[in-house]
Every structure is written in C-alpha cells, then in structure tokens.
Image (cartoon, rainbow, N blue to C red; front, top):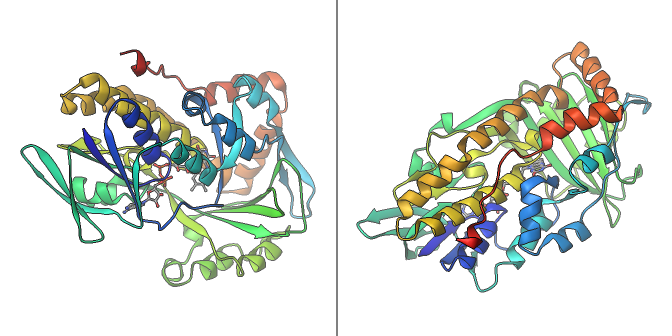
Length: 392
Ligand SMILES: Cc1cc2nc3c(=O)[nH]c(=O)nc-3n(C[C@H](O)[C@H](O)[C@H](O)COP(=O)(O)OP(=O)(O)OC[C@H]3O[C@@H](n4cnc5c(N)ncnc54)[C@H](O)[C@@H]3O)c2cc1C
C-alpha cells in the first residue's frame, strides 16, 4: 500500500520504518523546512527502548544521551531539600533508561528510514476519500493519491482536526503549561543531575548538557498565566508567571529574553473514541498523547507506530481490520498510561505548600532502595506484550 504520513517527529518516521520493512510504500510529510536540532530532553525507556534496539538505532541514541544520576530539589537559598537517585530506576529497568534530546531520537529514527520519500516544508492539509483510495491535498497546492493517510503530526494534529472534527474535547487540558529552552554558558553546572526549585503552582528546573548548554524547564499551573499576554508575548507571560520566585529564577528568566527557540505549550492529553475513520488513522501524540507528565510519550509513539504497521501487515488486504486491531491492542494500555500521568501533576507543580512538603517527603522516601524498586518499578514497567510481527 502507498501510505501518506503527516508529521516527521517520532511516530512518523517510526511508522515509515516498519511499513517499509513490511513491504509498503510510506511517504513522509513534515511542515518544518528541515529536521529540528536541540530542543528539550526526554527520558527514554521501556518497550520504545527495546524497539529502538530492534531498529538498530540504539547506538546513536545512547551515544547522544545522558545517563543521569540524580534528581535534586532545592530551596530558595539553594539548599538541597530532597533528592532521588536515578540508578535504582535504571537497575529496575535492566540498565535500559537514558535521557536524550527528543531531536536526537527523531534524527536516529529518520536515519533508519532508508529509501523513504520525505517532503520537508510540505504538509497534508486535507483529503478526499473515494471508493478505492484517498487523495491528499498538499500545502504546496499539489495532490497525491494514497491507500491510507496517517496523522503523526503531534498533539495539535491537523489530520485529527480535518478527519475527526476540530472538537476541543479531543484535547484535554490538564491545567498546566510547560516551557523549555536552552541557555548557553549558564554559570551553574551540575553534571548528570536535574536540579529544580518548586513553589506552589510553579517549578523551574535545569539540566547541564554538553557543549556548554543548559536545558531549562518552566512548569506552572495555567491560572498563573495571563491568557491575553500568552497570545501576544509568551516570554512576557512567563516573566509574570515566574515573578517573585527566588533561587536562580530571576537570572534564568532574564536570560530567557535572549533565547531564539522556546518551546511553550499547554500540557494536554488526547482522548478519542476511535483512532481511524475510513482510510485515515492517527498515531503517536495525535492519537493518544499522554502528556509530558508521563515521561514516556516518545516510547509510546514508537510502540503505536510498530503495532499500527504490524497489524496492517497481519491484516493483508483488509486494512480496515488492521486499523481496528491496532486500536484494540493498545487502547487499554494507553488509557492506563494517561491515568498514571494525571497522578503526577501534583508531583511537578503541587497546588499548596502542604502538597509541596508532602512531595519532598515522598521523594526522600524513594532514597530507600526497597521503596524505589517497588514503587518506581511498578509505575515505569510497560505491561504490554508486543507481538513479533516479523515472524508472521
Ligand atoms: C517538555 C516536554 C518533555 C517531555 N518529556 C518526555 C520524556 O521525558 N519522555 C518521553 O518519552 N516523552 C516526553 N515528552 C513527550 C514526547 O516528546 C512526545 O510524546 C513525542 O514527541 C510524540 O511523538 P509524535 O511523533 O507523536 O509527535 P511529535 O514529536 O510532536 O512530532 C510531530 C511532528 O509533526 C510535525 N507537524 C505538526 N503539525 C504538522 C502538520 N500540520 N503537517 C506536517 N507536519 C506537522 C511537527 O513539526 C513534528 O515534527 C515530552 C514532551 C514535552 C513537551
């Protein structure tokens, strides 16, 4: 089958790779003019990690990644108030846990897509389905015929809006916003340690990267943001939301003014009753975004891509059955991941001082290896068995 895929982030190239391997003809479309570099860093583990190994791309991911050692929470004066060692988590996962720029995972996935046609700077903006195929309208004014069109175009998917209706209920806002950016030559360095300072409703965290860069994350409850200002001046809205915070925050916020690339978005989950309609289907964040709170969206997007390609392969000519089986296999697993993510909102941005104190107590309890292995192990393991579609 010839399959048009909108979006070349994580799910898009992962899907293209497996479709190609199963004998199909995927074509990728990406609205950005070129692959992105830099950006935020993700924690990568679980079945997504295993799939990366099967795809032969684990080497470059691990090489570009960071084997983080510690999560350190500090008071306004920089004093440590709680800390969590990453090693017990890594041990629970058999050493298969790495932090790496999302862009580096995307680049490794795309690099594995040998002989797949990729159109950067071009999107699928609409489609028309008739008896035997679907015709995609492209942003450059052209048209292309496919057997299926897949939306792998992220949280605010265009394919979802066109194919499933632009229904605000599909994207559920979780009441927080997140911003991420990189600073050069930031004076405070803590190797392989996430350092964060939290006050009720807001958190600022930093991570020392290679080449003199530092990644900064700003997370806040959405009510702290002036909606009008967000529309016209995101940095201004962030300045206001984080005003009055101590620790390194005034310096970080001042440096943000000189940053060119700033990621800023509402923290949302995507919930749909169905992931396909006719010859159109969704994968990755477009289908079932768990939100950054889950810390696993990348691996999950890779799992979804593998299962979608595998079920289409298994179903032979009956693509409609393949699409049904794809959803049937993953729906409950992803709903559970979404539920678990909701519980972590209070961990990142507690509402009250009491909640913050409780969070710090909990983090310190994780310092006990037994507790860490039991609790963390249970929440990070993927309770899903992936079929071996290559044996079919
Ligand atoms: C701050 C932050 C921290 C995170 N931390 C983690 C973590 O620790 N671990 C983890 O696993 N995950 C994490 N995630 C989530 C993870 O990044 C996503 O779940 C993952 O990237 C989803 O992959 P995707 O391919 O579905 O979407 P994306 O990675 O968003 O890719 C979508 C692609 O589609 C393109 N696109 C968008 N619209 C169009 C269009 N109209 N036409 C064509 N192309 C289009 C985009 O440019 C992009 O390239 C985090 C997310 C954020 C925001």
